[in-house]
Length: 331
Image (cartoon, rainbow, N blue to C red; front, top):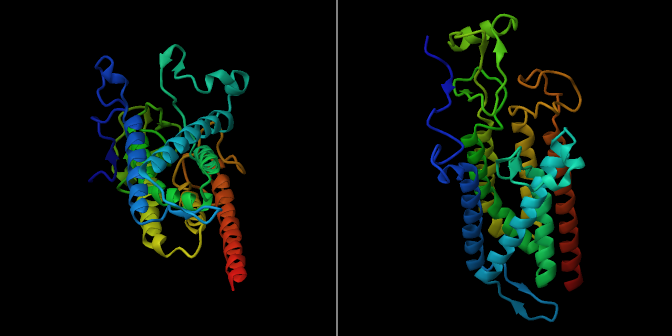
């Protein structure tokens, strides 16, 4: 029988140059962040050429945006994004309580005397932090927040694609067990849960179904490559949708709201295939996290996605109403 699964490529390591002094500290995940921010800059540069970032000041003069503006805008957003992503990851998703007791460890690149970088980032924390960074920059430079947020939200998904590819290269944030032929057997470091061939009665029939031969007492089963699902739908597909409509947006704030709703929706669905953090599990049940047993099982990520969708709808409604009142006042 032809195996109905894929082994994670043995040549992929978190480090770009594994085993080489100094160069071994350079990781794919960090490189993907550089690609992500670089891609966002290129998209914003194109929007700049289209005049999407030009505005009118309170005194009636035209404010023409420059490349320096978008560079500083992105730089400010990145700083706030990283702060928010790290704080959320350590204070919300980490259940050990260590970071609450020792908050100085939140931004420490060392763990137990070893250099790890800032391992652990939360998208939703980054979303909040990035939004605050954009608010701060627009307030400081007296630019219309909704117009600039629209541009940034149009650029984010394409860059986000690289971030999830970085997660795949790290062999982390994998999905739940699957018998689909594209299921991947991820490495056990970071440790994917292994199952007992002897005591877990469902394991042997599952292995027979996918053509996997037992090689020991415990086995590592194939999982959904949920990182790649996210790279595709929350990245490329969402970007394509936003890019197709960005020139036809009916009012400022529309693109930001559409991104928030779109990301929240795609992520909510994909969370059914992605395994929740083991120390958190589901918020409403004790069902095993490694397998989809009920669509009623809700993860922390899905709760945050629901909040994103609701927030996006509120923002879109408020911006529509504001635009309507503005048009009425002109007539």
